[in-house]
Length: 159
Image (cartoon, rainbow, N blue to C red; front, side, top):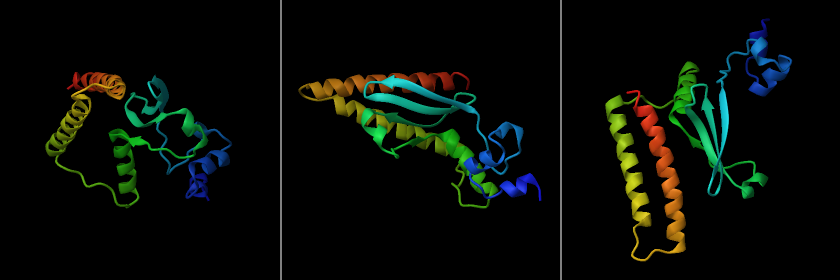
């Protein structure tokens, strides 16, 4: 029996243990190892934790706060690159995955979603009388909008 066959059906952690803790020295297929980085960035309400691939594309992320340190689970945003990787793996194993759409149509849908989000954020700070809560929202929205715009511009410059 080959080492690959012996490892089949085990979790990644079980396979790492079976290979003596050295994943780069052994073939631990069928798992896919994505090299990358974990980035911790301070934001107004906590720490933004993002996982990025070796090309710095976001895979997943969440905002960590003091209160969540005692929790095992939290809401996590899943980004396109990770969705692509998972979809590819699902297809490889004959499991259901997202149907591929026309790229132009899906780009238009994504832009519509982005415009809707910007409109909703703008409406949330367009009030008759500004309060402290409005100013706090504005500070957070400014940070989010600047970060998102920088990311979009960096990626779009290569198009």
